[in-house]
Length: 140
Image (tube, rainbow, N blue to C red; front, top):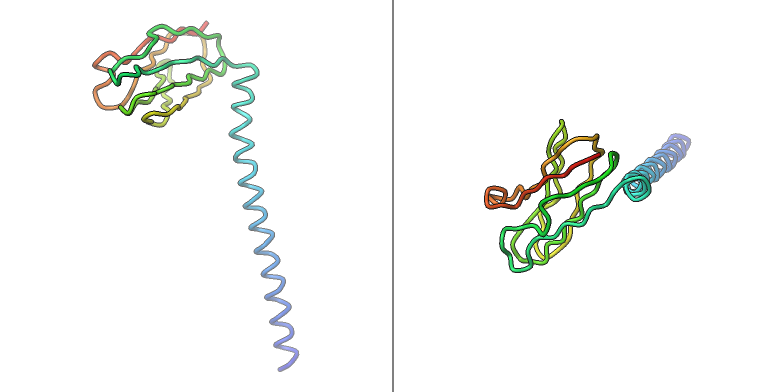
């Protein structure tokens, strides 16, 4: 019986170590996830184009730009929304449909790998697009 208890304790110890390794692996998986997130940011910053866009500070339904231009490749639209009115930005066209998070009095961004062509960007919140929060993104 004593041997059985000792064997059970050793098995539990190894199982616990295996669980810790798996948790470390999961932590390792978490580490690559942010690295994976920073890799697109790095490629977006290195070979890509970042475009600044702002919503109206007074909360009206308008962007400060209605025409944006970028070279083909990774493109990020950084939206500054200083108002308490919630806004987001979405890129759509040529098989691409990517949207940012909706924010109030904050900043957000949306990124996509874009081929040459014409895309639309707009605020997908409520009827904001219908009220004029839209524009054209030309990728060359």
